[in-house]
Image (cartoon, rainbow, N blue to C red; front, side, top):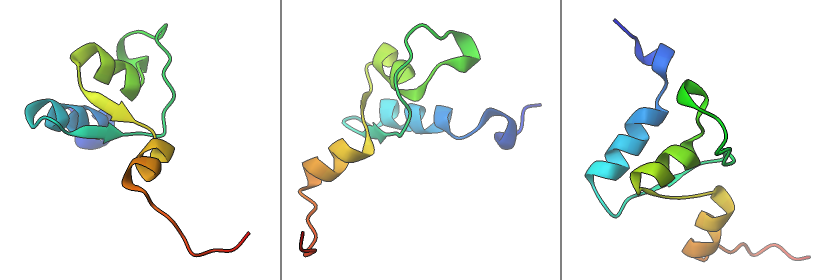
Length: 71
């Protein structure tokens, strides 16, 4: 029997986003479409399943996050 530590949490995040649209998976991974099987990256799995995904910077931009820091 496989344990959660062995398969990781990524499959569960993608499955949740697939089951409850319009969820978006936020990831720091970079797409690598040439990779196959267990080496596939989250963005590529999401794309193949039709799940929306974005990176952290896109999330911050979409949420309109701002700080009061001065340049």
